[in-house]
Amino acid sequence: MTTLITPLLFLFPLLAAEGKPVPKFPLGRETTYVTGPLDKEGYIDYEIALNERLGKGIVPEKNANVLLWRAWGPAPEGGKGMPAEFFKRLGIKEPPRGGDYFIGLRAFMADHLKLNPDEFNAIYDQQGWAAQRPWTAKDYPHLAAWLKANEKPLALVIEATGRSDYYNPLIRPRTEKGRGLLVGALLPNVQKCRELTAALACRAMRRVAEGKFDAAWQDLLACHRLGRHVARGATLIEALVGIAIEQIACNADLAYLERAGLTTEQIQKCLKELQALPSMPSMADKIDLGERMVYLDTVQHLRRNGPGALDDPPAKEPDPAELRALVSIYVPALRNGNRWYDRIAAALRHKDRAEREKELDKIEKELAALKKGVAGPGTLTKLRLGKDVPETVGKAIGDVLMGLMMPAARKVQNAADRAEQVGRNLHVAFVLAAYHREQGRYPAKLDELAPKYLKAVPNDLFSAKALVYRPSRKGYLLYSVGVNGKDEGGRWYDDEPPGDDPRVRMPLPALKRDKGR
Image (cartoon, rainbow, N blue to C red):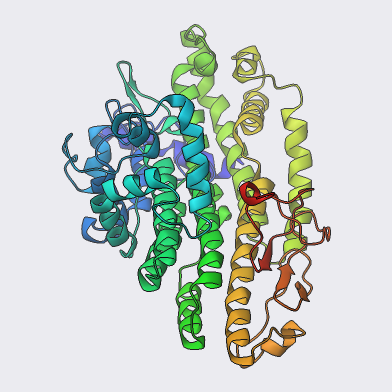
């Protein structure tokens, strides 16, 4: 372990002699992961390091996020908005405070419709239904008014999703005491993208009811592209929101497929456009870069401010002797954390899901052991700085932080796998529609789709076997066994009883609010 650190330590006086900051840690892949830039005190500026990687080669003219901010304005959630550095990183000026910006449904109900808050939930229910089934202005007049008020910003959103790149800077919160932790970076635009998706899906379903099928399909494609853009952000939160957006789009796609009355050629064209969409970013990449740097930034924050810095309220500042001890203690904490992130990212990159699950089983058991007995950040203050062996204390600090900060890798990967399966099912549904349009019936078996309609029928990602397909006189049920690996008869979360089988049922089942009518 000392072979990398020792030679790097000799660089410290040299850097100081050249008038450069003296690094607080040995710089390298094992410790700081990146070698710069350094701030004036010699700490890695992880905010700059991360943003330089995320934004490399992306210019404002091709960045979808630039137009999205012009669609919702400088403060999507109200208040002061984003730090000036955020817009500087985007390469644009902060949008003006006044503008024809996207109006969220809640603000529209309160400020424009002047509804009583007791009426809000009913409108939210309508929004959920309207994003999944065709509707008219007569059905939901408040939603129709909301979409009309947002015509200009939604046009910008459509334009934004047509751009090739996406860069969302991760900026630490600024306070009177200076810059905060990278883990606290603001992401108000991410949830706002879910609202935009709901609006586009609602508009698509209204256009389907009006017979404007081409315009409806463009709205749906924009939803898919928006989800992929958002998922390209640095964090797992952004990836998960991107997956949620994709699910909204897929649900609406099925309603479009059922009601649009497309010809075989039109169905095949839609399928090609779906297949041409970029792949969703991998969860391994999020762990490997963004989440890793958030962890390293937190370790560095403790090195700068002492292990009590994460307590609430913060513990007393360490004395000079403790600060001297921190130099040797936090090097093993950095190494320990990097080993964990390397291992988890490698596990998530396994192409074979069964092998990936085995490795994640091992990792989860070890992480569970780390978390045992860790009640919160205050645990860090119990370490005896300057008294225990630095390597031992450093490893303990790394273990505590990993127990506190490491996301549930299996859960986020399962979410990504589920989204992948939903997409596979959707593609097969379009192929089945094309077959039905030509043959006047659905096939008895999925094998009949290949090779004329589909090169090869995809397997169930979770079972590695064929998808379950049950045709009927008027439709079919197509499903995967889902994350739990159990065949639950094609029951999904919204069924009674609920299940875990991603499925397509044609004709589409009635929404819950329609039952009993």
